[in-house]
Length: 202
Image (cartoon, rainbow, N blue to C red; front, side, top):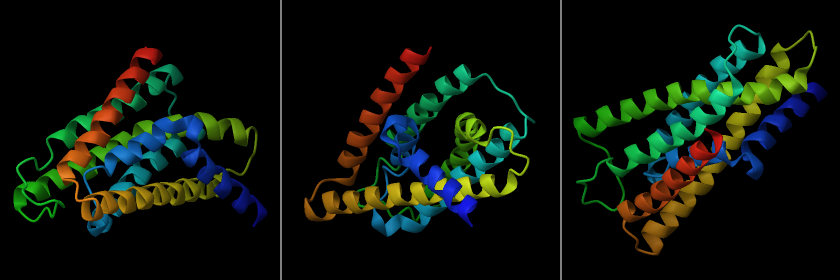
């Protein structure tokens, strides 16, 4: 039980660590177009992202895949920039302050977002693996640490999107801001930061 709690805490701390804000920025960008009424969709997005990074995290720790760390550090902000860029065009003709996503065209966009969250999760998982591999060292038993670490990551991600959705709902519903303006503000900022990170890591 002690080992589970240690690695669960490490996963939670790693995803919420301000010093590693690129992963936080991706989660925030992923949920930028939503508000609290869309919590189920956001949960599915986070789950798709978790599935993606869990796959490559396991493969990397087991030495099945080995990708240059510098390349991954560059690709992570690229995933943020692409997600932020797609947010700008998401449901841009909607007149609702909160996106309801009821028509088939928007449903297709949702499927595309789930798929991209999964694929981008594969890249982020390789980034997580560098940190976890250094923690595991020569440990023979890695299944329990891997599982616990992933659960910690998932709990951290859920906490991040919950805060984001609460803030988004407050801004849109109580401060009467337009959902699209709020989306553009977050996505534009995320895109700028991501581009800056890519330049620094090139």
